[in-house]
Length: 342
Length: 258
Ligand SMILES: [Zn+2]
Ligand SMILES: [Zn+2]
Image (cartoon, rainbow over all chains, first blue to last red; front, side):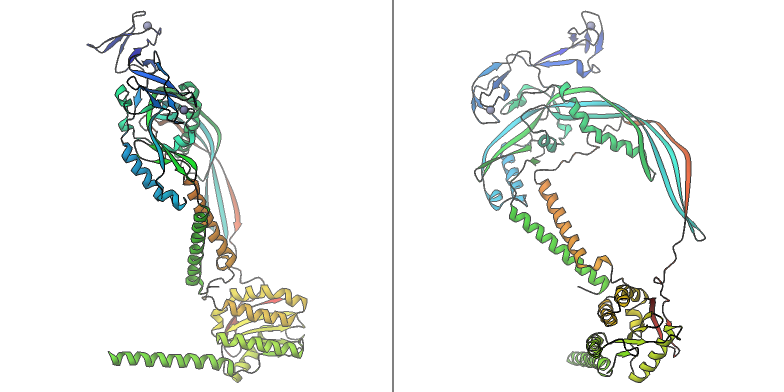
């Protein structure tokens, strides 16, 4: 892997002196320390010798593998892919969360999950119809986000008290202002076009304690998908993801009022750092009643997501069971309170 | 041990006999419950109401009585009712009764609960019964009003004293609706989550070290005060509540104009 340090002043490649840990720019003379050098100015690229890129002619997926891999199957459609390009100058991932769940463990975890499906048809849980399981690194952008919020609100505090035979309701009005610094770290957005965004969001959270600097050997035995969207294109998605988080933080800073109505809310968020990161995902292709169902499993935590088939009979049974027992409980309570069943 | 058991059985046996006697005596001793002094009812209506009253009287050990009068001079229907009941109770040896009295001349109606009915048909329940029979009274269907009084009061008396028998909580349709909503809600939630749940929260990616409030203002602006009267404990919309008769019998009750 080739790592380039782009000078924040002039954009030239800076020279790295491993003795002192210093970076120096040959063009403008700028000096930087490697420890504090901004992540956005570090460019990681694949070495032509270490990685290959496969294009699936069947579905169009682009898959990255180690250079040693000679032939493989597309992780999306299963078609054999043979056409390979050497990667030259392509952006390499900065971080990776390695697989901690092996294929055997993934199969066991998936079987256990199908058994826990309370609404799935009986055959779904008992059946052993895993057609294919592929361990795949899915490309994500992780954003460190800095933000500022400036909000104004009109808040009220209401209290009631009684004097004589009169009830007084006193409403105090307050002008409330809050200015705050906001910081969110490593908020992920999947950069794959083929992966369903909602599905990938449900796979979160990953344990960032296992987040490693990317090295080629992590790819051994797995496939990695190439990113389809760059970090600029996905920033709006991440923004819409954290806005509800910011809103809840804002309201947590305005406490002790009966009502709060915002008159002005200004939120600015910008990305401080972006990390091109690979997350481990087991893709499970499961045959059931002549239909293929696709599930995804978090390759680190084992969490399974995806739409399982739903049994109308089981839905009806659960509904009837819950409604009937709730009715019975209400009857018992009404008998205990009122002494009457009907 | 055997001795203890047989004592128990004896006690139970006597208890059953007493309950049986109590239940029978309440209904068997009384032969008239409808006193139609104002001649508002036909003979067949009286016969039918007697039958209905007898049936429900046996069930609660409480006699359901109906008294009509046509006395333009009687300025208080409660006094009239009290005098009637003092005499009736002495004559029949029964203190537990629900008594519906109406004076067709002054258009007063009063419902009272005596003895155990003073608690099983308290002022609140009396007013609920009156609410239901008032339309019939106004229509002139006095037989219907008494029939309704007997069936409604009899139903109310099955409820534990003090609870509101018309509370929505006791309604079958309400209990059914709650049960169905709960079933639908929980199963809907299960279906919605069958494909996995979002488990990230606002704090998952939050950086508490670098997030902080930098400016804060809570400025009092103005206040408004609104006043309202403490609501009076209503004794039941035009009723005069319970009381006691000239003979010292206390009762629950309520009355209306119709
Ligand atoms: Zn420079
Ligand atoms: Zn393909």
